[in-house]
Image 1: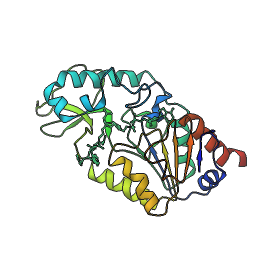
Image 2 (image 1 turned 60 degrees about the horizontal axis):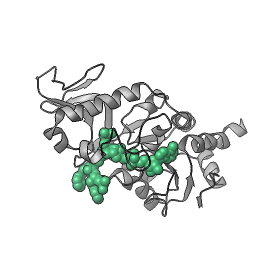
Image 3 (image 1 turned 90 degrees about the horizontal axis):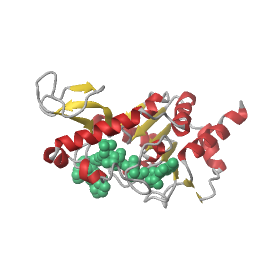
Image 4 (image 1 turned 60 degrees about the vertical axis):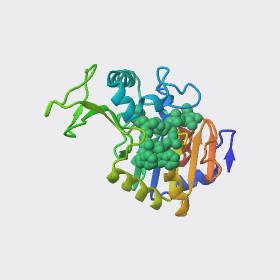
Amino acid sequence: MKDSSGRIPREVVSRLSGSKRLVVLTGAGVSAESGVPTFRGRDGLWRNHRPEELATPEAFKGNPELVWSWYHWRRNTVRQVLPNPAHDAIARMESKIEDFVLITQNVDGLHQRAGSEKVLQIHGDLHYARCSDCGAVIALEEQEGMITCPMCRGPMRPDVVWFGESLDVGLLTQAYNASERSDLFIVAGTSNVVQPAASLAFAAIRNGGYVFEINLDPTPLTGSASATVIGKAGEVLQELVRLAWEEEE
Ligand code: BJW
């Protein structure tokens, strides 16, 4: 069912309240209501750069100062914002369903700040840097400019996954396994164009799962999803949680 009125189908509500294996997949749209820019679409540019221009190993090799300044700027932006009702609703789902996995493409850490614990950050974390030589990972605080490894003095890079790079195999395996065995798969605020994240909902569908999508606009997943609501992730997820649990408490 595709609903552009923002109404949540009853079947989605009953599937959530009865879910035994829930997976939620999130993208940049879930952090948009906190004031974090998305990558694509409306307002989808980061400081006038396309992600393809900066989120690549080639960009880092060609101009590491520019790439680091973009990531420092984003980290500072994210530190000044708060989790929004979408993050809160997802954390609430985790508190209600034991077999729960949150797969996020976001690198901003806002899910954890909202209280989510079972989080697979498949594209990494903006708040960490990794040594290109020895692989050491450090938490970033107030650093600016280029960063050198405290262990081996090698060049450090943001601990994120750029285009053309492989995702962590262990995380990706966990994400596929959870998706394939989910009885409800909620996908919110992602354009569903970046692989392999965009394949996870289809893995759920192939295994008989029920996929509920929330987005401001249709995506390549919309035609295959079991149900879609066109609306803001914060509003729709809060309403979904309220309908599934609060009315019965
Ligand atoms: C709202 C809203 C509101 C707004 N409420 N909704 C197979 C086929 C073709 C290509 C490939 C393929 N396999 C691999 C590739 C290449 C590539 C890829 O997928 N390219 C496509 C663009 C075509 N993938 C890779 O390179 C991946 N690596 C890989 O697969 O390795 C093996 C391999 C390599 C090469 C060839 C083949 C195999 C790695 C991908 C890494 C992505 N990295 C980034 C940067 C991370 C670090 C950082 O943040 O800086 O990840 S790019 C960027 O896109 C970021 C995001 O996580 C990711 C997804 O974006 P997302 O979250 O969907 O955001 P948007 O902006 O696109 O969408 C926001 C949505 O929200 C919109 O729909 C709005 O409508 C909506 N919205 N407000 C609800 N309030």
